[in-house]
Structures are given as structure tokens and as C-alpha cells.
Length: 111
Length: 113
Image (cartoon, each protein chain N blue to C red):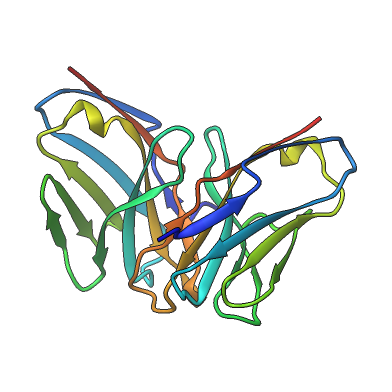
């Protein structure tokens, strides 16, 4: 069973608009949530994170929202830029320092 | 600062051959991870090492073995490669606290024919 799911394989938005990427998880005991960005032929790079004691964390154009009752995580990018086009993965910290990732969402930002 | 270094970057193996993927980090991190990335499947955890001297299975450990050689190095071995192991492999490292991010290497693209 997948513990972390990203139900949208791809998302296309216009430059300057908001991008919203979503992630659902199954275990209410997860305590730390992360978003990673990946360009082709490169390793994933860390973007932003949030602890389970918070419901929002902001870093520049990137904001992560956590809805614990719904077991739902989202990443907002405002305004979206063509350079944001990449695959985005959400990840959760599992028991024993294990880090589990979702399937990824490919974001395309059109100029 | 090199971060996480993986070798080799590319490899082609014949079915049944063995090989070891190397990973080293210079950030003094305690935890290290091996993932594979396949189209539509995201990043799946193969094995991880929460600290030097310990290793644990992840989501897809079958067909692989690991060795945490020391604090810096964590290797992944394929004893008898199969076409289903064709993938891109990523190594990552992390400090030993749970509320920190992991840093990834550039990946090894492995093709088994």
C-alpha cells in the first residue's frame, strides 16, 4: 500500500499564475513533511518542509500547507515561472528515520 | 563541498552480472539511503542506514544488498542483475534527526540487458 500519494501525474499552468501541487498520506503519525524538486538528469533537491505541529510554512514564492485532519499536504507556487517546470515529489518522515516519497507530479509552466 | 557523490554515473550490465554502486557523503551525516526511480513510480526506497553499523530494508529490497562501510560510505550491490533492475538509482544522506532534509547525489543510470 502506498503511504504517500500524488494523484496528479502532471499539471500545466501559465506563467505568473498559481501552481498547486497536492499530496495525500495515510498515517496520522507522520511528523515531518517535505517537498523536493527534480530536473531531468539531476538528483532531487530540497524545496521546503513543514512539521506536523504547524499548518503552514512559507519561503519566498513557495508555501506548504498541512491539513492533518484530511491527511493532505499541498505546495503553492506564486507566481509560477518557466524555471519551475520540473517534477515535484512530496515526502514524509516515517518511523526509524525512513523517508518515503510520493510518485511525483510533473509541473509545466508555459511562458 | 562535494555533498553526496555517486559512482558510476552510467552502467550497462548483462543479465546475471553483478556490480556495486558506490555512494559517499562528506557532510558527516548519520543516515544514508538508496532509492530507485522508475517512470510513473516516483522514488522508492530500497535500503537505508539510520546510523553507522545499521541497515534496514525499505519498500523494494529484493535483489539488492547494502553495506555501510563507514560513516561516509554506503554501497548498493546487485548480485545477479535482472532487466527489472533497469532504473536510475539515487543515494541520499541526512542528519540523524527526523526533522531535517535529505541531500541527494546525481544518480546512477543502470541498464540491464
